[in-house]
Image (cartoon, rainbow, N blue to C red; front, side):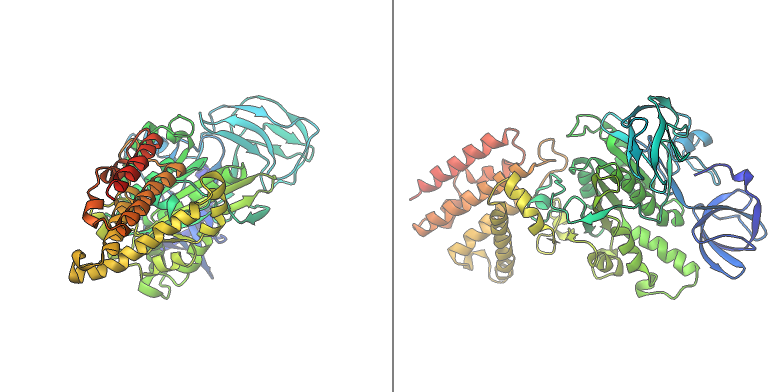
Length: 585
């Protein structure tokens, strides 16, 4: 955002202040214009115009601001600064760099009315052209590259709203983001800096059907409920069920080139954990610090409520910019419930007719508009890039029937339902396998067949069937006890127990178990299937269930996840299971 507040004429005066919503009179403005409110110049955005009155949502605390104070209009919509320097950065909800604000104020607490551009306009970057003089370029085309971080090469593109033309001059060297690096014969100058309105999706040639999974390294996700690159997922769950840890795991391990993590209204200590962990974590793909491919937007619960409403859009716009370069981007929104609450707060201040549970009537439309910007895209420059959106939802009391969860479920294609009962039993990730689903399974199966194993879908279906049968049998067990069941059903419960404890459970804090590649996920499931097949053959030969379950090799199934040399461990385990169970008959 520009800092030149002083150059803007006084346009209007404040008439009324109601929390983050300010009404101004005599303000010449358009919808979504950025304005500066009051003597301190608090940043806000026009959200309603009626006759002579303009309603503004203010992104800062408004206490002490009163009627009669000036309102100044910039005439520009809320935009983000795009260019080198966004990775490894930590922003607030309107893309102000928090480290710079701290430097300016000499305090960890933000003063009001302080602004700073989203990227450093004074830092020089090493620019290397990828086109030559005389080459014709169109909007979106890459003209050069900048080594932004150890992991990511930043591609300098012709802005999408340019006309394009032939390159009349271009040279390598060190430039600031505002200095022209190339000039077109049309007179247009290309710099490393672009501005883009956050509420407008960046243009793309075509949205395609995703067919490659976003591999997360979490067995229950990759094995049972996969998400595609360019897909959408929701993680609803009550307090303490592990939403944030699941999102941290996805941010750390998901097979994406770039991660945009939006902490939207969550507690400060959770964002602190991200800020402290990510610079120290090693990126499994490159061996470099994880922060070098991460952009953090921290809008904690003690920050002004209106800024929560914009932080989601700030995040998705940054994600689309990297998508245009041909990168696969994963956006984590934690949590969309806090975003919806910010909309509810502003809607009530506007005295709009409330919908279900006080949320605005346009809640579903706003959620759709946000998730719709995810996808696998053919970009206007001919590259292919994706934005995968994973939104946490925090339903009060874990009630999935509340409006935010229900409206999210209508939009997203992957649903990872977190379960407080599983969390209490210390089963993590506490994703309920009976309630969760993925609508990407069929379109991703060919990839798993080609890259992991030909029988991946069949093996997964076997696991689903066993878990379903266990769920039905548990009702009977609670009534009459396990011993009243026939022996084959008792054995099914034993197999299901190892599916749950050895395969679905995963330790996010164990060096080996924190990430499980798809081949290991497949092999681990194969070992449990080997136990299942051998055990049922022994049962048919007349061996009692107790004797089968007591075989020495069986408990070693629980150690597969933490075994460093897992291939050899599973080979040996499968061999021992066959040998020991067959020796019983």
